[in-house]
Length: 282
Image 1 (cartoon, rainbow, N blue to C red):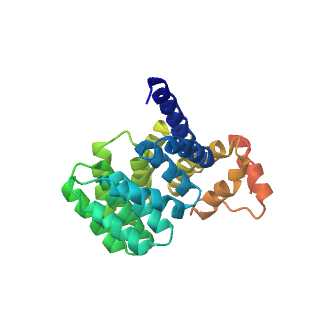
Image 2: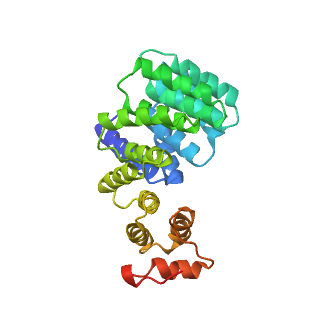
Image 3: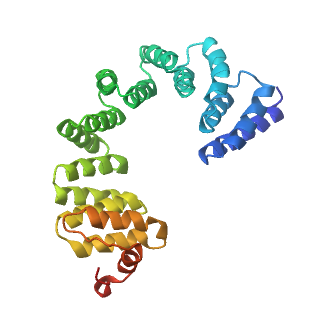
């Protein structure tokens, strides 16, 4: 292949990746398919194509090319994607079997454990899902992502103590990750540690200030602490320029033991769009 052609294909692949990240799945599929017509074994193009098909809920079309690629050699990323495609194509037995084979490979490939655990949890096999992540953590004890996964699964199993312990360990290992902070704050909120939860939400907002869900959750903490003014200010920030979030903001006020309830959406909108001390009374 000429240098010019290599450069052209590299540029096309970059465009396909950008389209995939922008969730322009049809465009990513089109570009990746074009690259594969010139080179059927182009691994990066195949990965883009498979992800694009899965993004369009056409998992069954991704299976054949992934199976061919998996036969060409041991490739845990391809195999994990094949397992996901089989599950999405309503071939869960085959998909889970594929994911278990990949998770059994050594050296361990972390995403295969995560995909397998996620599929098992979705199927209601929560205990087995937790066991998969525990096995992965035994192999990769320093993995922050696995600690976060175990915490989320533990929370689903209503084991908040274990979820909290793993989230604290994950936060200590990666203090700059807002996803960990947000999960930890929610567990703290559920445990009634409203002040600590509020502080953790504020930390997360310092890293990701435009996260409206986190700001709404901060408002819930403030309401439970009796800080109505602070909570209402947070909700007004959530709503500013985002009228479609009125229902979420009004719900946050309504469910708190120190909140407010509005019979009419227009009354909630008037209250939340007001400025501080001049706010309308419900």
